[in-house]
Image (cartoon, rainbow, N blue to C red):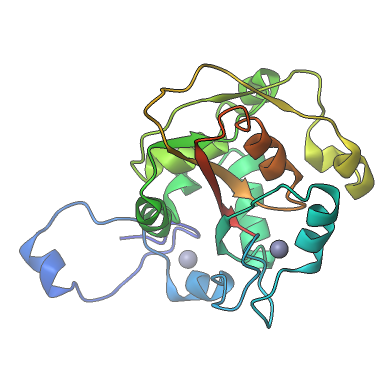
Length: 225
Ligand SMILES: [Zn+2]
Ligand SMILES: [Zn+2]
Protein backbone atom coordinates (compact mmCIF):
# COMPACT_ATOMS: atom_id res chain seq x y z
CA UNK A 1 0.00 0.00 0.00
CA UNK A 2 1.25 3.47 -0.78
CA UNK A 3 0.40 6.95 0.48
CA UNK A 4 -2.12 8.56 -1.83
CA UNK A 5 -0.38 11.92 -1.51
CA UNK A 6 3.40 11.33 -1.56
CA UNK A 7 3.34 7.72 -2.89
CA UNK A 8 5.70 6.47 -0.15
CA UNK A 9 4.97 2.89 0.85
CA UNK A 10 2.82 2.64 3.97
CA UNK A 11 3.88 -0.21 6.19
CA UNK A 12 1.42 -1.19 8.85
CA UNK A 13 -0.41 -4.22 10.16
CA UNK A 14 -3.74 -5.00 8.54
CA UNK A 15 -6.83 -4.49 10.67
CA UNK A 16 -8.85 -7.61 11.44
CA UNK A 17 -11.51 -6.50 8.95
CA UNK A 18 -8.97 -6.01 6.17
CA UNK A 19 -7.50 -9.38 6.98
CA UNK A 20 -10.88 -11.09 6.81
CA UNK A 21 -12.13 -9.12 3.80
CA UNK A 22 -9.20 -8.58 1.46
CA UNK A 23 -11.07 -6.08 -0.71
CA UNK A 24 -9.69 -2.97 -2.36
CA UNK A 25 -8.85 -0.66 0.50
CA UNK A 26 -9.49 3.03 -0.02
CA UNK A 27 -6.84 5.70 -0.27
CA UNK A 28 -4.63 6.19 2.74
CA UNK A 29 -2.21 8.87 3.84
CA UNK A 30 1.14 8.16 5.48
CA UNK A 31 1.71 9.67 8.92
CA UNK A 32 3.84 12.50 7.50
CA UNK A 33 1.09 13.49 5.07
CA UNK A 34 -1.65 13.16 7.67
CA UNK A 35 0.17 15.87 9.63
CA UNK A 36 0.16 18.18 6.58
CA UNK A 37 -3.63 18.39 6.41
CA UNK A 38 -5.83 19.85 9.12
CA UNK A 39 -9.54 19.25 9.39
CA UNK A 40 -11.90 22.14 10.01
CA UNK A 41 -12.13 22.44 13.82
CA UNK A 42 -15.40 22.15 15.75
CA UNK A 43 -15.50 25.91 16.26
CA UNK A 44 -16.03 27.47 12.85
CA UNK A 45 -18.27 29.97 11.13
CA UNK A 46 -21.75 28.43 10.85
CA UNK A 47 -22.19 29.92 7.37
CA UNK A 48 -18.91 29.25 5.58
CA UNK A 49 -16.99 26.79 7.83
CA UNK A 50 -14.07 29.19 8.34
CA UNK A 51 -11.83 27.91 11.14
CA UNK A 52 -11.94 30.32 14.09
CA UNK A 53 -12.06 30.45 17.88
CA UNK A 54 -15.78 31.05 18.09
CA UNK A 55 -18.93 29.71 16.46
CA UNK A 56 -20.24 33.14 15.48
CA UNK A 57 -20.72 34.34 11.89
CA UNK A 58 -17.30 35.40 10.56
CA UNK A 59 -16.47 38.89 9.26
CA UNK A 60 -16.47 37.72 5.62
CA UNK A 61 -19.97 36.32 5.96
CA UNK A 62 -21.15 39.42 7.81
CA UNK A 63 -19.93 41.42 4.82
CA UNK A 64 -21.84 39.15 2.43
CA UNK A 65 -24.98 39.51 4.53
CA UNK A 66 -24.76 43.29 4.33
CA UNK A 67 -24.67 43.09 0.50
CA UNK A 68 -27.08 40.16 0.11
CA UNK A 69 -29.27 39.98 3.25
CA UNK A 70 -31.31 37.20 1.62
CA UNK A 71 -28.49 34.66 1.43
CA UNK A 72 -28.82 31.55 3.49
CA UNK A 73 -25.37 30.08 3.18
CA UNK A 74 -24.93 26.60 4.66
CA UNK A 75 -21.44 25.66 3.67
CA UNK A 76 -19.47 22.63 4.84
CA UNK A 77 -15.72 22.42 4.33
CA UNK A 78 -13.67 19.40 5.33
CA UNK A 79 -10.09 20.68 5.53
CA UNK A 80 -8.29 23.92 6.18
CA UNK A 81 -6.70 25.52 3.13
CA UNK A 82 -3.25 25.42 4.71
CA UNK A 83 0.14 25.03 3.06
CA UNK A 84 -0.17 21.26 2.73
CA UNK A 85 -3.58 21.56 1.09
CA UNK A 86 -2.38 24.36 -1.21
CA UNK A 87 0.48 22.17 -2.42
CA UNK A 88 -1.80 19.19 -2.89
CA UNK A 89 -4.34 21.34 -4.79
CA UNK A 90 -1.58 22.73 -7.01
CA UNK A 91 -0.42 19.26 -8.03
CA UNK A 92 -3.98 18.03 -8.52
CA UNK A 93 -5.26 21.04 -10.48
CA UNK A 94 -2.31 22.58 -12.23
CA UNK A 95 0.28 19.82 -12.60
CA UNK A 96 -2.24 17.31 -13.90
CA UNK A 97 -1.74 14.70 -11.18
CA UNK A 98 -5.21 13.20 -11.54
CA UNK A 99 -4.27 10.23 -9.33
CA UNK A 100 -4.61 12.58 -6.36
CA UNK A 101 -8.39 12.68 -6.86
CA UNK A 102 -8.72 9.80 -4.40
CA UNK A 103 -6.63 11.24 -1.56
CA UNK A 104 -9.64 12.46 0.45
CA UNK A 105 -12.32 10.16 -0.98
CA UNK A 106 -13.20 8.50 2.30
CA UNK A 107 -13.93 11.78 4.10
CA UNK A 108 -15.59 13.35 1.09
CA UNK A 109 -17.93 10.42 0.62
CA UNK A 110 -18.85 10.35 4.30
CA UNK A 111 -19.56 14.10 4.37
CA UNK A 112 -21.67 14.02 1.21
CA UNK A 113 -23.72 10.98 2.25
CA UNK A 114 -24.38 12.63 5.62
CA UNK A 115 -26.12 15.50 3.80
CA UNK A 116 -28.80 13.15 2.38
CA UNK A 117 -29.50 15.30 -0.70
CA UNK A 118 -31.39 14.48 -3.90
CA UNK A 119 -28.84 15.84 -6.37
CA UNK A 120 -25.11 16.53 -6.19
CA UNK A 121 -23.87 19.18 -8.58
CA UNK A 122 -20.18 20.00 -9.13
CA UNK A 123 -19.04 23.53 -9.96
CA UNK A 124 -18.29 23.49 -13.71
CA UNK A 125 -15.13 24.56 -15.50
CA UNK A 126 -15.24 26.63 -18.66
CA UNK A 127 -15.03 24.26 -21.66
CA UNK A 128 -11.77 25.81 -22.82
CA UNK A 129 -10.15 25.30 -19.43
CA UNK A 130 -11.51 21.78 -19.11
CA UNK A 131 -10.04 20.91 -22.50
CA UNK A 132 -6.71 22.41 -21.50
CA UNK A 133 -6.53 20.58 -18.18
CA UNK A 134 -8.18 17.46 -19.53
CA UNK A 135 -10.55 17.15 -16.58
CA UNK A 136 -12.73 19.02 -14.15
CA UNK A 137 -11.07 18.45 -10.78
CA UNK A 138 -14.37 18.57 -8.89
CA UNK A 139 -15.91 15.88 -11.08
CA UNK A 140 -12.79 13.78 -10.53
CA UNK A 141 -13.09 14.17 -6.74
CA UNK A 142 -16.70 12.94 -6.93
CA UNK A 143 -15.86 10.08 -9.29
CA UNK A 144 -13.04 8.92 -7.03
CA UNK A 145 -15.43 8.99 -4.07
CA UNK A 146 -17.99 7.03 -6.10
CA UNK A 147 -20.60 9.77 -5.77
CA UNK A 148 -23.07 10.16 -8.67
CA UNK A 149 -23.61 13.74 -9.79
CA UNK A 150 -25.46 15.89 -12.32
CA UNK A 151 -24.00 18.78 -14.26
CA UNK A 152 -26.79 21.26 -13.59
CA UNK A 153 -24.59 24.31 -14.00
CA UNK A 154 -22.57 25.51 -16.97
CA UNK A 155 -19.89 28.14 -17.07
CA UNK A 156 -20.44 31.31 -19.07
CA UNK A 157 -17.61 31.63 -21.53
CA UNK A 158 -15.13 34.51 -21.56
CA UNK A 159 -14.86 34.87 -17.81
CA UNK A 160 -11.19 34.52 -16.94
CA UNK A 161 -10.30 32.14 -14.11
CA UNK A 162 -10.26 33.47 -10.54
CA UNK A 163 -6.62 32.70 -9.92
CA UNK A 164 -5.67 35.33 -12.49
CA UNK A 165 -7.71 38.03 -10.81
CA UNK A 166 -7.11 40.20 -7.77
CA UNK A 167 -9.47 39.91 -4.81
CA UNK A 168 -11.21 43.16 -5.74
CA UNK A 169 -11.66 42.09 -9.35
CA UNK A 170 -13.07 38.76 -8.20
CA UNK A 171 -15.59 40.43 -5.93
CA UNK A 172 -16.70 42.72 -8.74
CA UNK A 173 -17.12 39.91 -11.20
CA UNK A 174 -20.47 39.15 -12.74
CA UNK A 175 -22.34 35.88 -12.62
CA UNK A 176 -20.08 33.22 -14.17
CA UNK A 177 -22.69 30.43 -14.27
CA UNK A 178 -26.07 29.59 -15.72
CA UNK A 179 -28.41 26.64 -15.29
CA UNK A 180 -27.57 24.03 -17.91
CA UNK A 181 -30.90 22.23 -17.75
CA UNK A 182 -34.27 22.05 -16.08
CA UNK A 183 -34.26 20.40 -12.69
CA UNK A 184 -36.26 17.28 -11.98
CA UNK A 185 -39.38 18.57 -10.23
CA UNK A 186 -39.07 15.92 -7.49
CA UNK A 187 -35.73 17.26 -6.32
CA UNK A 188 -35.98 19.03 -2.98
CA UNK A 189 -32.33 19.30 -2.01
CA UNK A 190 -29.21 20.00 -4.04
CA UNK A 191 -25.63 19.97 -2.82
CA UNK A 192 -23.18 22.10 -4.80
CA UNK A 193 -19.61 20.83 -4.55
CA UNK A 194 -16.35 22.69 -5.25
CA UNK A 195 -12.70 22.07 -4.42
CA UNK A 196 -11.94 25.15 -2.36
CA UNK A 197 -13.90 28.03 -0.80
CA UNK A 198 -11.92 31.26 -1.09
CA UNK A 199 -13.97 34.46 -1.12
CA UNK A 200 -17.29 32.64 -1.28
CA UNK A 201 -18.19 34.37 -4.50
CA UNK A 202 -18.14 31.20 -6.63
CA UNK A 203 -20.33 29.35 -4.16
CA UNK A 204 -22.75 32.27 -3.84
CA UNK A 205 -23.00 32.75 -7.58
CA UNK A 206 -23.63 29.03 -8.07
CA UNK A 207 -26.24 29.00 -5.32
CA UNK A 208 -28.04 32.00 -6.77
CA UNK A 209 -28.59 30.14 -10.07
CA UNK A 210 -31.13 28.01 -8.21
CA UNK A 211 -33.10 30.89 -6.73
CA UNK A 212 -35.67 30.38 -9.50
CA UNK A 213 -36.52 27.15 -7.67
CA UNK A 214 -37.50 28.50 -4.25
CA UNK A 215 -38.72 25.11 -3.02
CA UNK A 216 -35.33 23.51 -3.46
CA UNK A 217 -32.95 23.73 -0.52
CA UNK A 218 -29.36 24.37 -1.56
CA UNK A 219 -26.38 23.44 0.55
CA UNK A 220 -22.72 23.64 -0.46
CA UNK A 221 -19.54 21.73 0.30
CA UNK A 222 -15.87 22.10 -0.52
CA UNK A 223 -12.86 19.99 0.25
CA UNK A 224 -11.04 22.99 1.69
CA UNK A 225 -11.75 26.39 3.25
ZN1 LIG B 1 2.57 10.53 2.33
ZN1 LIG C 1 -18.19 32.72 7.45
